Length: 203
Image 1: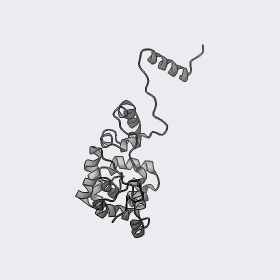
Image 2: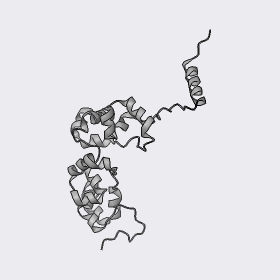
Image 3: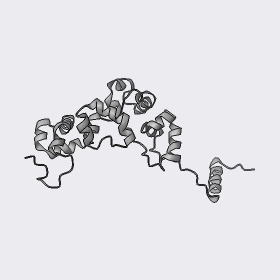
């Protein structure tokens, strides 16, 4: 008697499910990371902690249908924000992600750059000024839940638009971002691509 292979059995089960109208869920793509997905959403952190398979199952069962993004957590920026974590984890971004889920979010740590976040929203520019910590706290307390963009400000384009700023700041994008928050926004400067050479002349 010849025994069916596991692949044959799995295929037969899938065929049967198709016949009765139940489509098996496809596995996540190879690039999908359940931990990154969990780290992207506070509610999933509270529900699943660092349970990677649970994150993958939620994505397949609910996340895609809810319009969630598979990964909005920037593990490299998270490490860059905190020298103490760099000292512990080095370049191990998976360990850093687990730490964020298990401890970092409760400690008020974040993967965003507070100044970039503030520069992305006019109301925050007016309310917070160039207060990096206040920006990070706003993101954790309100911004994520409000569905705000964490970083919609293009500091490189902002510098490229204005030769006077290039002369003053060189390639210092953080100084350029602070300038935008403190002065540029009120002056009507922008990080948009120019459509004409005269668009960004400040007179």
